[in-house]
Image (cartoon, rainbow, N blue to C red; front, side, top):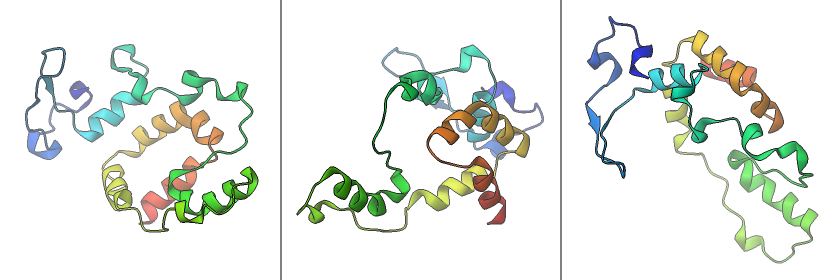
Length: 148
């Protein structure tokens, strides 16, 4: 994935600080900067593919299951009352999470601001079906990213 970076990009520009410690396979791996990771995931090279960033629609055939409810983590506190009502659950309001600002929200947008727009469009092309399937709009995220 590091090879996706231009040859004139310095290690200090990308925050490259060495190797990850040995894993269970007794190999050390270079730390891959976020822009290189996004660029690599946006390609169709199979040697960089991993189930962790594979399309959900390829992994679990969600269109073959008739879901009653899909909860988004960013709106879970607002979604629970509707879920409880539809499921006929009463007297469990103490189980509801409190509505609060997500701590990772700002960090998320700060990381994505580093990504060239052409790499973001490749991500949109690759993961567009998942965005649509779960009720998200990639263009809204792009507007939010550059409107910040």
